[in-house]
Image 1: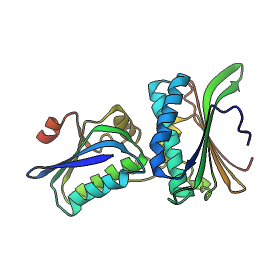
Image 2: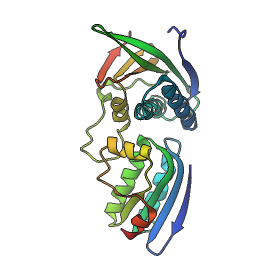
Image 3: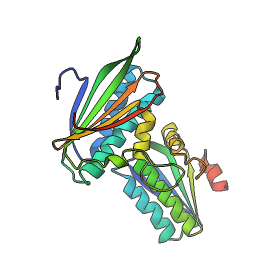
Image 4: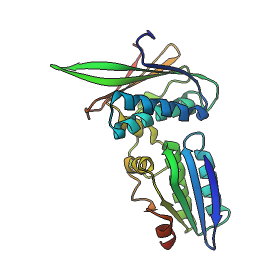
Amino acid sequence: MQISTRRFDKTVILDISGDIDLAHSTEVRRMVLAEFREKKTPRVILNLHDVNYIDSSGVASLVEGLKASRDVGSRLILFGLSPVAHEVLQISRLLKMFEIYDTEELALQA
Amino acid sequence: MNRKGWLLRLELPSNPEILCVVRSAVMRLAEEMGFSTEDCRGLTRAVDEALTNIIRHAYDGRPGQPIELLCRRVQNRAGNKQQAGLEFVLVDHGTAADRKKLCGRSLDDVRPGGLGLHFIEDAVDVMQYTSHAHENRLRLVKYFSNPKIEVKTAKGE
């Protein structure tokens, strides 16, 4: 799994590729939480277009990120969900909990 | 345990890095068996989450501990009907799971953690956990086109 960061004025986009599973979810969690808690980033957008797989630990990392964003009054936004990622959030009944957009353009406009 | 007649038998270390390899194998096997794309993803997710639970809970995150994964075709007779399916058995020698916790948590409570069992129950028709003589065994079965989920726990066999 790889994560690259694009930083704008008040927004950070994390481009994630690969699998968010037990081997890698802690890295996603660490980076997302750091944006909210340490860097006080108002808006963090996760690009999941190239994420092939998300397991329960990956979902847990996203939920922790969401809670951290709410704690500091920031926003966590997802876009580019693959069918697998969409399915996992659907089974977890979390689709409505997240701000989710189809494209980066729509996510940035939100 | 008789190891003959299995389609797939893998001996794995309890290392998270191996999970992607197992997912690929299970996905391909389920496809070959003729499951739908959705069922293939579900089965892959179920086996992956079961392995994750073994690594995290049975072995408490210790790498290099032994896990065995076996898979075979099964036939189940229900009345006059025969049901074909795929059976996975995961064997470990770590700490046995608390049977009281062997059910997915309520999804109404939005919080991290506790989703793995829910993913497994969502994907398979049979989930059976046994623990005997320092050997824990999780049996998962997915039948073709059968939505019924049966969850059993038992001590020994």
